[in-house]
Length: 226
Image (tube, rainbow, N blue to C red):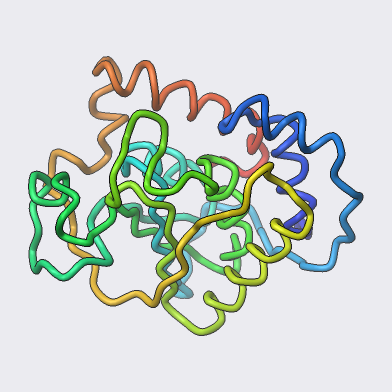
């Protein structure tokens, strides 16, 4: 069993991963040594258990988020969908207007005995820019906001604590703007959005946006992949 601290993993990833590219890499050189205060369980096996937890993240286009998290050991199901708005049963076209209040999100079923919520957050914060308000790359609008929809008080506490730590350590040149909100309802996206990257590897967005991100992720987190 490997035990490793959140900020240790985050700092290592920050040195290696250029999702937010040269600004963050340069900033990280000045970061202080972080104590390993927060232990992360990760048994790293493929045996599914009955102990399941849900994490719901928004980090820009859900095609990108899904492609990253479905590769992790301890994650057993990943679905793309919509959360955070007021419109019931929204369609992709409706969410894309930016008027529904919904964000594109990924619903992640994981086994906390194999991979912790804290570790998932280390991946979340390293595979998008949490300082960019309602924007990730060329994708703009509230539907692309950085958001954590917590499903328990414990998840809320962990998310808020980690954001506070990252801001205090100046892990990014700008403050984190990630929204932390109570989960209410998840609306699964249309079937063609599910497993999108794997099903459409030659599509333009997949080749030029998702593939480079996934390749960097797989390199940095290679010890935690299925």
